[in-house]
Image (cartoon, rainbow, N blue to C red; front, side, top):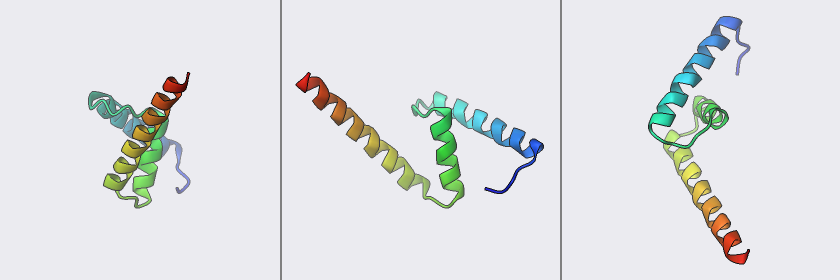
Length: 73
């Protein structure tokens, strides 16, 4: 990421704020940090659909681990 001046930092923050509001409306479960990482990955050329699939698979794996931990507890 190129060095950004104060004006562009403010614009980036506003963009993330708007995307976070959209994310909340769509109930994605992404927090501001995760959303920022996703945006940066997309800016670097990562396919958004592939990124979405990875996030979904990670959530499934996490749920599965939590479920198995609950069974053993």
